[in-house]
Image (cartoon, rainbow, N blue to C red; front, side, top):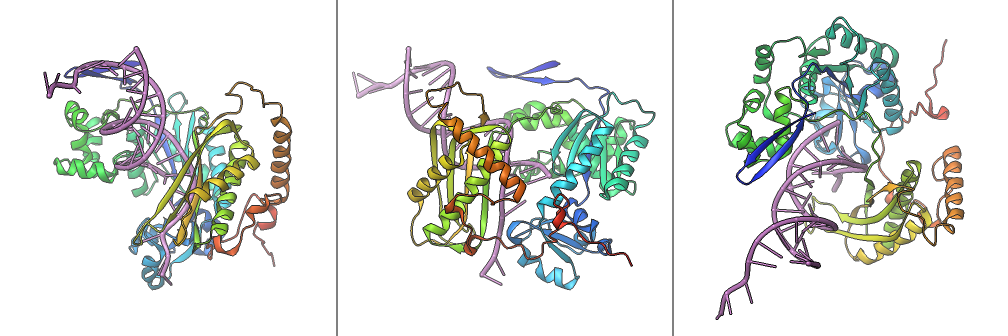
Length: 441
DNA sequence: TCTGGGGTCCTAGGACCC
DNA sequence: TCTGGGGTCCTAGGACCC
């Protein structure tokens, strides 16, 4: 791997870069993924406006093309979009993550057949390294991938190919707009790609969000082509190293390599907004304990233990007198034991709870996660063996009989902290009882 | 009335040490 | 009266992503 060192006065910056290369990186992105999943079981909604709501039926998080066309915005609160939804008879679904998770696994499994070098980037996106794949024609190959995914899962995808991740993202944007659903910058010449970049505003670049695009606009950079040829020293002086890397990527120099390995996460956050606001300490405790149990189960399933825990409660940030209370607790010995963690969270909650506020959200964050064998054995390790065994039994029972089959007494979920999920399709393709019924006459 | 959840990385600033 | 300088580590907050 080559390096480049930039000098700024007395300081220097070394970038580890792969040279301009013949790498082929394809970004596969499922179109309106959650909507597409819901449509699988509602073929009558093809070519109709459809949206999927976030947890608690709060915001719009997925829109069909038709829903976009009638002016429904991404991230908009449901109640604000309601007039448009009624006017255009838009179908609405509460989010159903069991279904989306299962469909995602199916898509990813198929993609892996097309290249073993794959980075699972998000629930609906993956980067494929096609550099070493034997093929006659990139365009035909990615068209073929698209066709197979659609045929085997029913999910439409867009594919963009280029020699860096950032350019593959842009190619993917182009693919989303064209009929084929694929776009490649590999065989196009530099001028042709530059012409395309001129048509993209800076905020469409991966890594350039709202604040950075404001910054660039203020400095008279409006499209990606201008961004590509910006002076590197000026960027480093006035912005961050990540932006500099992004600009290198636009120039075909790989600064964000693909991650093929599973990387253990560093944090685990479980939090929910309540269906209705909560004032009572015991109601809050039930919610916090539930979230703590979920988080503990999650990290156990990944073979991790936690060293510090954050517990937080907050009122609605859209109301006056917004209150956010948080406590961090460091554990003397890292653990993934539910009983221990639940006690700790309940105590911490008592410390931060103030009477008289209308709380709208509670959660826990397990941070500083480490693999189970990271810390050396200590005096108490052997005593923990029984508890480890107990946790294993609980996890196995819950996985067999459904979540919450065994739980701690404090976690009884009352109606106060329940989530709104009014428009759920209730389909779970990984759970036979919730599979849809088909009648043949 | 009703505004999601879960991640990552970077940076600035404070505490602390020699 | 004058009150160093440079390093590390930690943390909170910001920005970004899906």
